[in-house]
Picture 1 (tube, rainbow, N blue to C red):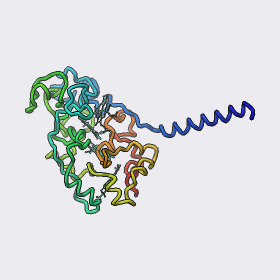
Picture 2: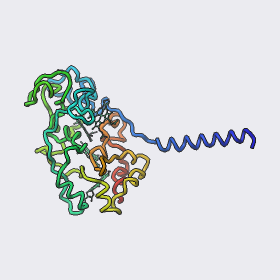
Picture 3: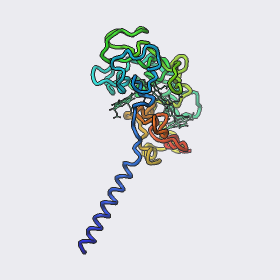
Picture 4: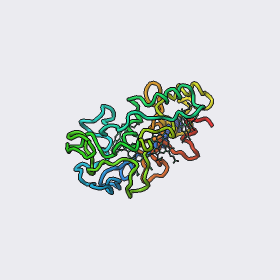
Length: 266
Ligand code: HEC
Ligand code: HEC
Ligand code: HEC
Ligand code: HEC
């Protein structure tokens, strides 16, 4: 074989290898918190900046601090920085007669104490204050009964979803007036694999979920029983500001309901 042929075979292999790699790495959804709806900092386009008393927090211009802290975290998971949930028990979607038996039983039992969905619900229940943090360096008692030295509110006034502010479109809390009612929201906190075993034709296997399209691989299941949680469908860090494609904080685009169809074989 002539050297130049060897060279072109080598080049072809490199190109082929590169194509396989770029296919596997394709379409990683963009992350960008700053200036999006999860940027609660005072310097961003913050909802807190329009709330009474905003600007009082010396660390309030940080983006991550509303959810994570590098030290003295309130939880040993995710270095979580919320002061805790106002709600610990939630009523989940159980009304349907067509749910798989395992999902229905698990939904009736409610969310387990280690459900990752509780991170989201520590703001999105509509009751827990979004700006009351576990640690942040101030140590002052916050109005609303939050104790000194650990929990305090940026902006001094604890505010929760829903509330009245002038920033953007208000996103209502999901939990209704009581803050604990998720009975009209997509079911969460149950084993996907167990439900799928009981409904093998209408739900895709986790392997088939990941292969539905190039982005479906970003759908996540949690723990040893592959539970379905808020962040199975949502990425709280997704670029929600400039790219409309991942609104509202989705793990993948939902064009043509691709997100739904990744799990539901319809
Ligand atoms: C609105 C709340 C929120 C904000 C703000 C936020 N995060 Fe997160 N972060 C989360 C949640 C919820 C998870 C868990 C997501 C999951 O289960 O996949 C997470 C996970 C993480 C993880 C571990 C998993 C991973 O994706 O690597 C890191 C690291 C992280 N966040 C860093 C940051 C940094 C750095 C910032 C600021 C620039 C930030 N986060 C801002 C909510 C937030
Ligand atoms: C620190 C409080 C906090 C946490 C924790 C939090 N969020 Fe949010 N989220 C907000 C606020 C504030 C808004 C904007 C409300 C508004 O503009 O009216 C928002 C908006 C949203 C929106 C709507 C975005 C849009 O474009 O309209 C979604 C979806 C969302 N959050 C999902 C989640 C999920 C899922 C989690 C957990 C992985 C989470 N959030 C954790 C505070 C939080
Ligand atoms: C099965 C996928 C899925 C799960 C699980 C899920 N969401 Fe969503 N969520 C979506 C989709 C898709 C949208 C956008 C709906 C639209 O644009 O019509 C959305 C919209 C939202 C919105 C904005 C609209 C509104 O009603 O205010 C918020 C906030 C939100 N989700 C939070 C959450 C939280 C918190 C959880 C967990 C308790 C959760 N989601 C679980 C798929 C999901
Ligand atoms: C991560 C996988 C996943 C995604 C993504 C997903 N779902 Fe589901 N969904 C499920 C599972 C699992 C169940 C429970 C099925 C069961 O137990 O019968 C469910 C339940 C439902 C139900 C209730 C069925 C009943 O019997 O009452 C509806 C309706 C539904 N999903 C619609 C949607 C829509 C619309 C979307 C897109 C916005 C979506 N789902 C996205 C996994 C998913």
